[in-house]
Amino acid sequence: MARRGLRMCDLLEPEMFRKKAAHVVAEKNRLAKGAYGANIDFSHEVEETLKLGEKFADTFAIRRNW
Image 1 (tube, rainbow, N blue to C red):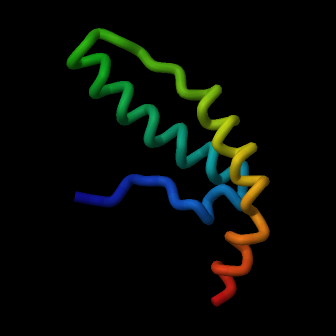
Image 2 (cartoon, rainbow, N blue to C red):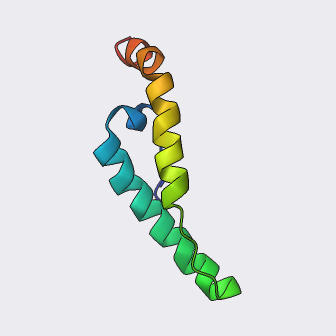
């Protein structure tokens, strides 16, 4: 089983974060559709998470360089 998640440092590269988030959301949507017949749109949450990432970017950059 492979790890499919988003890391805090992914927020430093918004386009990469969006790409990874789209992959994770697509997988979760397959599960939600099969179990509940639902299709979930997380685009708003992805953009809100990127905004939060901007607030903490300096902290991430410092820790990333250790």
